[in-house]
Length: 527
Picture 1 (cartoon, helix red, strand yellow):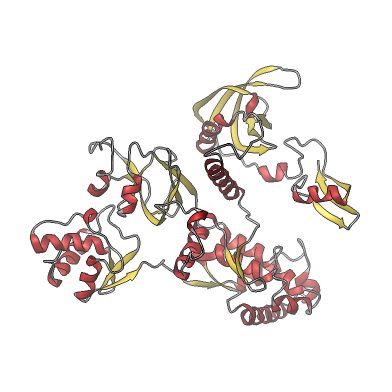
Picture 2: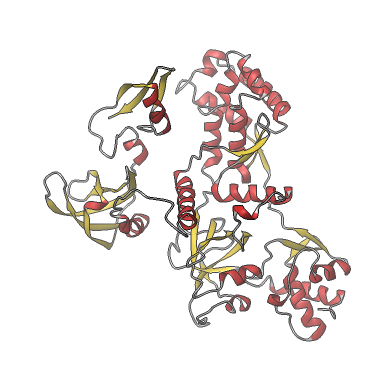
């Protein structure tokens, strides 16, 4: 590396311009900037060494990063190196669209436009202009100008601010037409409009990729920042560019070792020469390898224990900002500063149940691993988990719209029957799993308990997509069955019983009607 001169670096850059950045050699943390273009610093050094000495430098034997010899050399020769930045998209002003949405939806759930603004568009616009000025003054951020790339985090931020009762904006709302600003900007109007307009765009999938240390040295490839591709065995038609990934290592030291972003579509992608060195069982270069390219957000090579923190544990603001972004990118959880308590916190309401379940599973897994190392400290409920072995197969059939058949046993009379169905969804209720499917016999959508299904067979016969709203069908069900029309049920509890009912609701529709020192009264919508 010591023989590399500026002309060698320029020659390397020219070669990259001609041939492009090699597969697996994209930079994950820093970019070299030359004439407005971005280049991977380590790849530039590797190629430049060939121009200087005749031999290309193996990227696994030198490091990149602040104050490393490679970066010092580039800076000494006058090249600029900057941290990798996210690509930003143009902001959009949604105020006009929201005004039209309010007019269009007038009377469907509220009559703000007709009753409070006399069906005059200019009066509604003037009112929103006032909200916009007050919001910007209070929170130093925009209300109607949204960055489409970060729409989810911006929607969460607006929601947090609107419902923050300690903020000055809350006082402004309460004093103006009995909290009208918060009603118009809240969950039934502006927030709903934002979700409809921006919330469903570019849906990101979250995947867990498992690595087996017996076959591949994941830790070594991460330490040297050389893990840039991942072999794909399943869900090849579902994984797409922009999806998020957790790299999970199995074995004795199992756990989450890296967070990554998918940067290519699934295709025929060979492992780079640097990656091949980490295969423990050999790498077949003739293999028709289906894989994706990934960009590591963050990797953790050592487990952080509570005992390691001590009194002098330091956490830089730069690391904190990076971790906040990683947590939001991966789990969609927004960490915000609470001015009243002077702390950063995560909104406890995680709307995506799949994300909250994944976090719960990780937490339990880690707790069991740590808590039972020396002697049992965690005692689980003794219940038999039944039918979960069917999840992967049924999910595959749902995603590919394949007809399935199975033997079904009714619990009421132990009647055994053969079923052929069109699988639509999988639903969980009270620790049991159910298949929601359209019966080929009579065309009726039914539910089938996994624990009553045997001899499952997935055919190669496909069916046309069926429109069926699972959430709407079962939103008022207590369990999995829906027989009667929806009715409201009022229940009363002593204050002692009420504490249990509040902490563990009987149903998702549960509303508190009365909560005093003597009594808790709740309302349920049930069918």
